[in-house]
Image 1 (tube, rainbow, N blue to C red):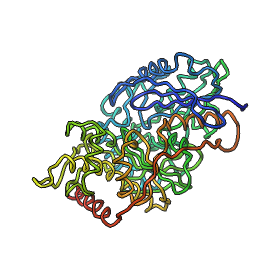
Image 2 (cartoon, helix red, strand yellow; image 1 turned 60 degrees about the vertical axis):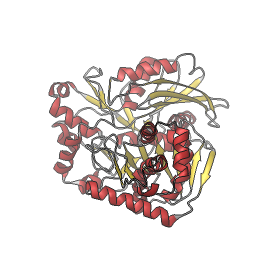
Image 3 (tube, rainbow, N blue to C red; image 1 turned 90 degrees about the vertical axis):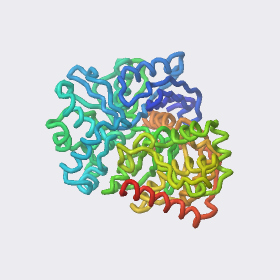
Image 4 (cartoon, rainbow, N blue to C red; image 1 turned 180 degrees about the vertical axis):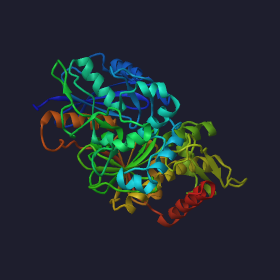
Length: 470
């Protein structure tokens, strides 16, 4: 890798295709581009390719020597014997396989068996449950399916196909660990899970090492193995021991790097692999930043006013508690749930309290993830808040109170794309470790009233138990 080399990372997310070109040595972002994806839970992968072609036009990849793809996890992309797409991909946020998930959990021996052998307890998001749904509901499409790949796998393969360097489908251990049929403990595929889900085995992509070469285009550009979006974000942020990420995008996630796989029979924490050879225990919710969108719409205000109202209200929102399950919920596993505002009286029915309850509810939905990490021996010393809602002053000030540790907000950036670019630089260098790329912190805050905050957290837990028995 020579001085001034350029690398690129792709974030093929639920919402869009984003390309980030970086200096391979320093990580400095040189240029970016993006194009939208359809807003749906079922998408023809051809739409992802159309977005890629739009975003990668105009010379953005000029001079790029290596590229990697970070992509939304779990999505089911089914391919026939010729490698053609069988049906539109079911994305992580498609909940139609909730019944299949419950059946698979029971048939495998219950939550503890899944946690101890695979590293996760399947919910509707997990790929294995989507394949099970397909076998039950679309047997003709299942019969045509020869291979199942993930969104990032498909994009990596298409880039190589278009560039004349494709040999076979590949993935990485991070994204493979979210399928339900790859074990975090054995670090291998489990054919018995596949057979349980669909009655037979089908082709799966080869799992590459974190810094392996997936292929090379005819122009000479190296293509890395890529990874899942959360693993890409961890790589882009350069997580240190004690750092926990709370990502507030379309979904909410809590994750940290760890040296070993964990087994959480509750299903809240999933023991994913990371993109560096370790592990990434993670909790994921369906509801995050869009809860604030809904709150602003309810109040008829913009985001700046929502922040002002929330910060003007007292902690605890005058007794209001929002269970923010506006799009059902993945964690806790409530695929039929809706949002609930509790404790409403004439005295507390003010715009400020409602705004405060919206922000607190969104964050409280992720507090269980941080507590779960602690319970499984993961150090929690600092929270890094990223994602679209991280720029909110209300989030920045309220988060440390509810999480109970200092909160830092990295400079806004496309960290999944940056992480993929960092992987590409690692592949290009051939070094044993990824390059060090610094991350700037733009806001920091400390918890100030732990006793009051503990009461708010406990009230939320009691509300979840009262309404949903959890």
